[in-house]
Length: 256
Ligand code: NAD
Image 1 (tube, rainbow, N blue to C red):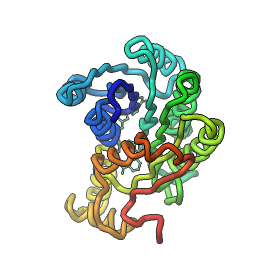
Image 2: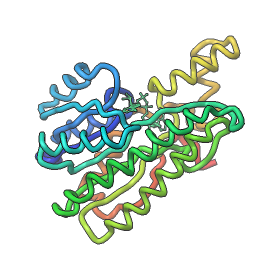
Image 3: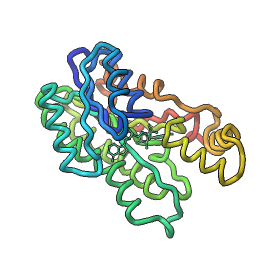
């Protein structure tokens, strides 16, 4: 279905980004990976799916490096057809204690990076009259939680950006939508599980159950594979007129 298309997935050396990259590669898309840490492992996982894969280590908090990454992707594959804005970080603290540099970093990586990648990807998508922009927001893009001011603000902002991008492309073959996961057991959430286990002197399993019990009626983590299949749907012909949605896959979190 996606043979001949190129997908750039930010923050795809791990977790949800890698899961989405795998699902898109399994449908034939060539992949540009991005993120910190080991890139050889993720590259070979994607290459094993029989598509071409490239990696660019742009720091998504730096607009100049995002520009370099977009130039690199165009040089490697001609054009980015599918842009998945997924890179993200978390920091947990009350507003009055929230370190200003952490606020700036969360906003830069979780929100401004999507603006930069989108503004740079749109001209070629519009010229080709086909494109998919998928923003990985969160249940925290739809509702708040205490001690996550920067994250909740960035994820709500990302849904706003999604709607505007969808409107500005509404008469074209380019669509823009957001995915809003609930808890997914990736390194980002494992850190919060570990902090809970340590603070309350409880086991990791008990901390996971507590985390789910606070928010997610299904008592199940959403998986990167499930989120990958939602991204595939947005890229399919059935997704042609799905524009500006914020689609939660969250075990009932925001239904409450
Ligand atoms: P993760 O920590 O496993 O992966 C984050 C990825 O982003 C990694 O590849 C990391 O290297 C990359 N990254 C971090 N800072 C970067 C930077 N400055 N420049 C480039 N890459 C950078 O986390 P995850 O859980 O897979 O999160 C992926 C996205 O999903 C994030 O936007 C996150 O907010 C969102 N999300 C996660 C959950 C969850 O429960 N895990 C829930 C809702 C939304």
